Image (cartoon, rainbow, N blue to C red):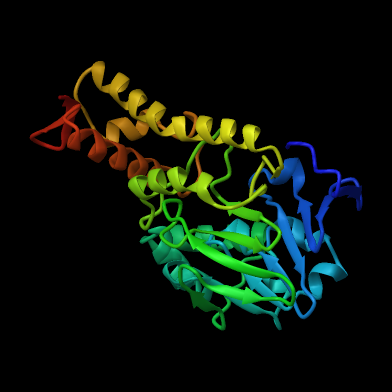
Length: 313
């Protein structure tokens, strides 16, 4: 995390939560700067409305200040960004239209995540209810690119930047020049685009557009926390973007060993370390690898033989 500006202050609410303030905007850093499964909570106190951007696990430990929230704007819909909704039954909740079904019902969430088997759905649902307090919000409303919420002297503006999910949006707090960039999180893990509605091409386009957002503070959902130095922000954005080409090169290296099927490539892993397992790992690996293979097929660096076997072009 880059150092806060002089106009900000950091205080420890307890041994787990650090708070950084930028005028009416408070950032509550989750464990390890919001490293997954936690996240970083943004609260905005306008003259008329108290609003929250996402509700990660750390939101459950903030107390009265979070519980007074009247408006929640989700930058996208994943379990780790909805972990505090159960505390806010009376708040108005908004999510990107493309991600809205995942907020409104478990069936919508399972479909959005591409979980088809009932046993898998039941296992993941139980885990998310236990670890993320997953609670559907059938009252949630959808928003489109450019949507604005007036809070009184401050407003939130949504900029659609898909790739991570179909609806993923950056939320800009105006006129303060603060951008909540969500799961364009600049972590060493790199971009995630393993959902059915994710897109490698859209993620590339969103990363290219991100520097043009008028901001002097950038807040990530995970791990990095708060950036106030543009040079550091741009350095980390470049490293994060480079992960996309590194993954493509990794696949080319695997195919240099000989032609392989998608299933064989999944066994060797592109995202997660060998041996790591969770109910969603194989399907996420398969989607991610396939998206890179499609890109490599288009530029002629990979060819496909009979039987779904991939080889170098």
